[in-house]
Length: 244
Ligand code: SF4
Image (cartoon, rainbow, N blue to C red; front, side, top):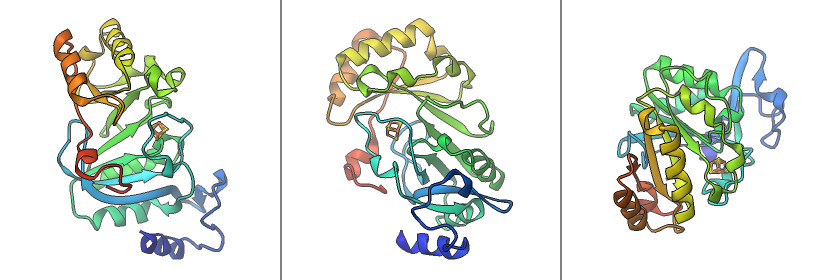
């Protein structure tokens, strides 16, 4: 990965934009839009409607939230600036059809929007994983949005923009990470109260090592809840290893 970053630095005049420079005004060099990246890697999609597909993950740096279960805290800081063209080059090198833009919170960077459009223009099947705390209304309509609803157990429930969920198309997804039975009850009430299951697919996932997957599955069965159970497949394959 460091090799990639060195290439990026050489392509972007690294002396003017050192790796530690996260200032807002470095998001553009002349007319060239850039994004700050933690990593680009090929793996198996572990969640959502495209679970199982070989997928290139483009992980943007930074997140304004601090969910207690976060498994990508290494993306909060650091990273390297990439032009959008360079991101496209790196994605193309992996030779697969599915691309997932994730974070951190990718929409915290304004150039995430043109990046998503550029990926769609290139012909990829593009998904976006986002926290539900930032407006998703300006995202390219060809992108499949996977929007979190933060439960009380996450510690970030006050960040939810619940009214934005009405923007989602039927082929998109709303995701709850369940940290406890109390979280499950809260999430159930929200889904049924707002009829989110009629909006699009609702995913319930156990918080890794906080709720037993079989317990969550049983709660869903017992309540005949119209949601889709999922586990984070990549965690079962590779544990908490970054870049997998
Ligand atoms: S929104 Fe995602 S990246 Fe940000 S703290 Fe929560 S889990 Fe981590």
